[in-house]
Amino acid sequence: MKMTKTWTSGIIAFIALQWVTSAAEVPEALAACFDKDKPVKAQIIAIVPPKEFEGCVQKLSEAAQKDPEWFAEHSKKSPGSPLPLFDEKLGMSQEEYDNYEKLWASRAAKKLADTSLMLTEVGDGQWKLNASGPAATLSLLRYDPKKNTFISPNGELEAIADIATPERSLLGAWKGKEWRFEADNSLTKSKENVALGTTSDGKYSFLIYRLQELTSSGKPLFDKSLVIRFAAKKVK
Image (cartoon, rainbow, N blue to C red; front, side, top):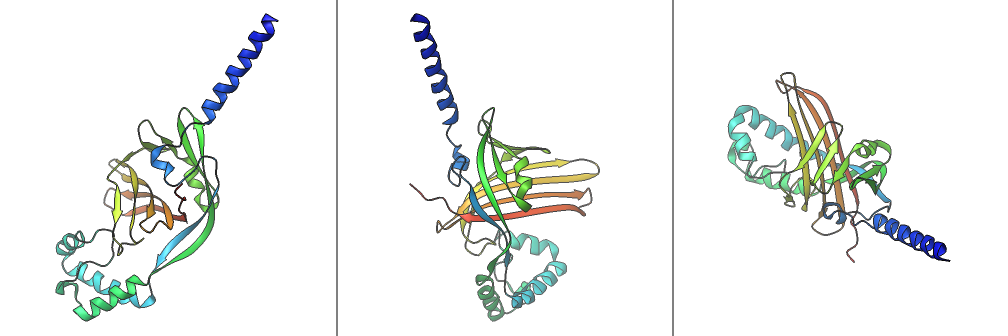
């Protein structure tokens, strides 16, 4: 009888331990967008402005070639937007600029492919975003909540400044977190970024991934970019 009681107590303790292990909370940096083990339907998208906006791109390119230093500094005043603040040195009138601004405001998200995402715990306190199809590269990443880093085959992506973009930025107004890895040697430069956040209207969330490799002189060797959009998690 005593052995049976001891054995039963051991089973109960084991079950309790398993429940505690499986009930680990989703890390704060990921919890705003994902629930554990819950599949999320998503789309890989590209932002496409109207065809007429190409005229603006051409004028901006000419302004950049004419005075690269000025253009680089001026563009910093409107980060995240391909349309700098108005200035006569952009090579367009105020009326033309206002029209291009309207065209940019009518940009649309074009679906490139469907994908799915699911957040799972993988042991050692780390988490994994399983992704399907063209986004499968993301499945190689691991998130470590203790360090607040993403771990990729290239190295650790460390947290950088939070994202808070205005409506005129490429993806519109949204807020989120970003992580980055950078490496530089005598031959190549590498940069890997992950960003995660939600639009200001609470409608969509974004998961953005980019891996770039350049020569030491800045010539592109490799550039993989994913912009993934999915319905924002409902606030309980």
